[in-house]
Each structure stands twice: as C-alpha cells, then as structure tokens.
Length: 118
Image (cartoon, rainbow, N blue to C red; front, side, top):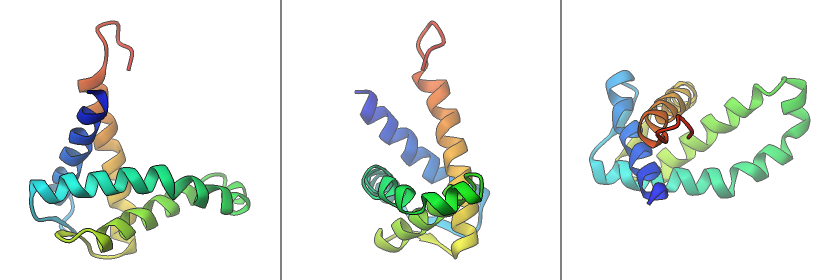
C-alpha cells in the first residue's frame, strides 16, 4: 500500500511542475502516472549503474555530478513518455530538483507515522 501511495505522490509532484515551470508540460493525470512509474523504474534500474560508472567524476565534483545524472534521467523519461515534455537539459535540471523537493515534502506530510517517523 505504501508503494502505491508513493507512486501517487510522485505523480502529484509531476502534475505540480508545470505550474512552477513553463518549460515542463504534463498533458494529463494518466501521463503523470505513467511518467512517475517510468521515472521510478529508471531511478531504480539505470541510476545506480550510472552513479557507479561516473564515480570518479562525482568524487571530483564533490557529489554535484549526481544532479547532472538526475537531470539526464529526467530528460530521458520526458523523451520516452508521450505527453510529458521538458524543453531542454537546463529545464530538466531544475525540474528534477523541484520534483525531488515536492515529492519529499508530500511524502513527509502524507507518509509519516504518528510518532513522526517516515
């Protein structure tokens, strides 16, 4: 059940992005659900491989290269999922950061236990 709620939270975060950035477009709730699913799969399967392959660059940049990886994966998903459009790399860079912040905030609000644990 928690996985389903997390998926819905991520879709809601994607739906909020076009209101914050005009360079991101999500055509419908169905598109947001599909994009959130694909983004979750990409982050689970592809991101760890890229992080390991780019570890030297990540260490030299003191971890900032992870933001570039996130932006590239966000942009990749926008190219794969129809109805989910991101204007370019820098738009994907900012959108990935905003998406993470919105998703984190919603998860913290909606998924915390009564004791305050996540």
